[in-house]
Image (tube, rainbow, N blue to C red; front, side, top):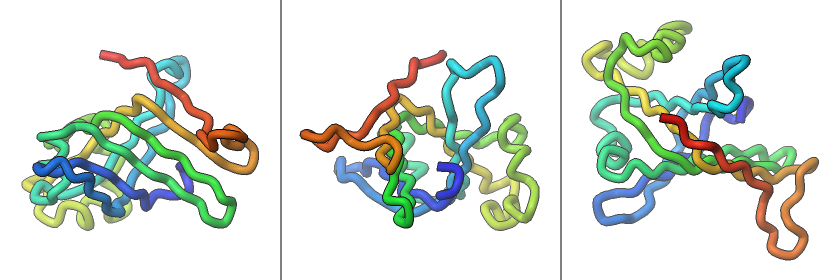
Length: 146
């Protein structure tokens, strides 16, 4: 997940059709002493993208991280939360290295970050294989925090 920052994002549109697109995602570091809080993935986007409206209507989101060279993938299923406040504490980490100008050319007017709060993570790779009969990947279920 840390090496595949261009991930497939699946949202649900108004016709309840799953929609897939590639976007840039950032995995937030887990805070020492708060491991139970799990991980959070942030997606940078603009206010007028389809995924913003889709997540507002159907907050279910799936992220697909893939590494073809090692034949491994991770899938996160969770809830998408829209943030439009550029003063959000997590947002300030993305104001460097040209990200603000790239993602939000009219910053702060078009500022949006999507926080993906995982409920379920599946992983399949060379060191953690799938179930030999069902091919189901290993999974982690995250405890929901308020």
